[in-house]
Image 1 (cartoon, rainbow, N blue to C red):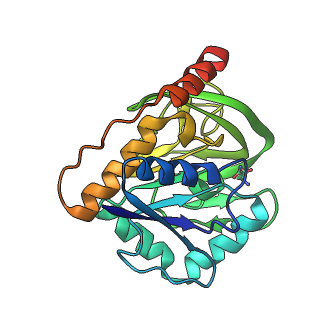
Image 2: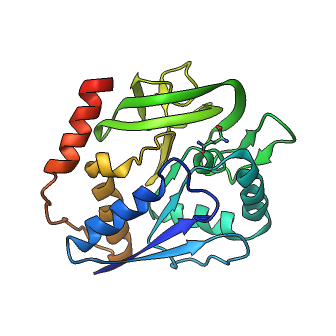
Length: 240
Ligand code: GLN
């Protein structure tokens, strides 16, 4: 089997170790004999249906977010991403990427940056940075990461949070929600990199991608997760 991982704006949106998520996805495919290719989709690249089996969209500062928001809105990329998510293609977005998949992100300076409205969420920059280790309780059990954002994201109405904060700030440091999940698309504030310390989530993304691509249920070969679990439990014991 093979898998193409679509790295959205990877040249601009890749702060706080987020590229480590691409490495984790690729390695956990390779360790199972699944061929994993990485394809970057950035400004001026086109994106067509079926070109990626899974998307990753990392974090970035306001400046990069402005460039990316313009490109997402102007090009067909935003519409293609939304239609891919509707047919079940999985996506992981972190912080700055997550913010641009909602309705809008209002930075400290300048006008609102329009999002593609994949998530029923909006974000407003706040006057305090929310920085530190984060632990949440989710459908995957506990997830651990590191957050560094000033943006406060709110989920009005029917949006489903990825999980509830056990330790840390999460979406906004107010309502204990963290992230958002819609179909197989996830947004969250968990840098770190997130996936190396949360193998259950890495495997869920790979499994969903293969099931959509090959149109059948897929059971992944179990891997020895002792190192990953050690990092995961260490983070929980120290911060959770
Ligand atoms: N500029 C956004 C914020 O500070 C996103 C930063 C990030 O991706 N870590 O909230």
